[in-house]
Image (cartoon, rainbow, N blue to C red; front, side, top):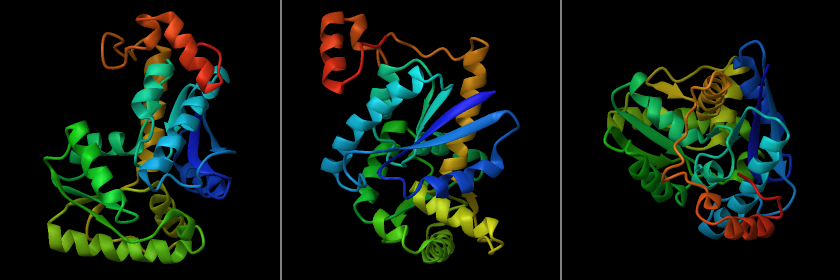
Length: 260
């Protein structure tokens, strides 16, 4: 049995059932996904300040998930907020939807585009792709001009806009694959597909929610047989390897017991 914690880094449970509905059909036998959300903090990490505050809650959730016995932790936002920080904090695999999707994009098509929610997300995702080293094959990062709180009010319209924009981007930018650069867009589109509405025929669609969960399954399997060997030498070195007292202070600020 593989247990995955999928965190909706939003304040409130408005998207929880949507994620469960659109991810569960693609789980293998023996995998369960529990969807969590924050009870405090910003509603959505749409701006840099709110994203920064959300990352603190994400770190707390990662620690809680590990201690609750989960085999992997998925950060359910395509900004991948708090991804590196969480990998410092916990030993279970932590998966970001954007990182995992862009890493696999070439398997779906040589050139890809990212289709995100609103204008504020575009430069953030462009920066992420450069950090991940996956920007070379990216033709564009574009937006459908929806904010998270509005998307939840009309999922059908979001799916329709995403489909139309994907076809436009395929034609304009020469993309062969589209990564939904927002987990809510991905869920809205997948919901429409599961309800029998037509998919875009122009490009391969990469659903970051499903990709992140499948990568989490794989990493959990590797962890179980001793093959998930995260380096603690430098980039993901926890603070406790340098100074335990400082690490304990950080843990106190996060409101958790010292970790690692």
